[in-house]
Image (cartoon, rainbow, N blue to C red; front, side, top):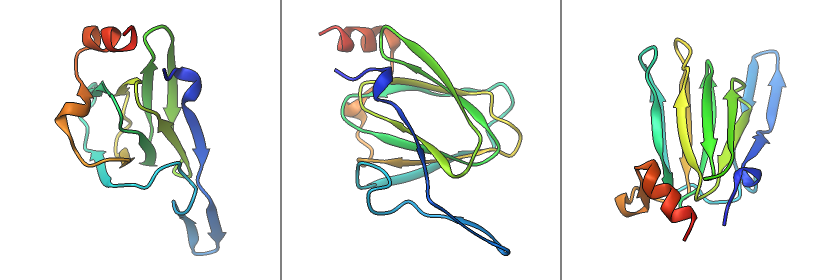
Length: 135
């Protein structure tokens, strides 16, 4: 069973030169092949995103611009991670509850997912998540 200790901050390789920086996610940067890419932006002040867990899917969150907090729960422990560097992403393994909040103005969160959308993989109620973790 996964726990908070399985979550990783992963530094994305950065190529720097006078024209600006370039970061690339390829090869073994993350431990899965991305099958879905989406991004969150124009999140109104005070709004929250997420509020779910996945039974199988893994996700890698990258703050392309600005910053936001990711609240992570494994059913027993809680951790808050602030993402604010576009070359550092957060690997969220399956079986972890996540909520995103405190989006700065102009923030963009890119998400690389290990699977295509499948509603059956989502746990959208925290009470059901606790039951899933205690099975």
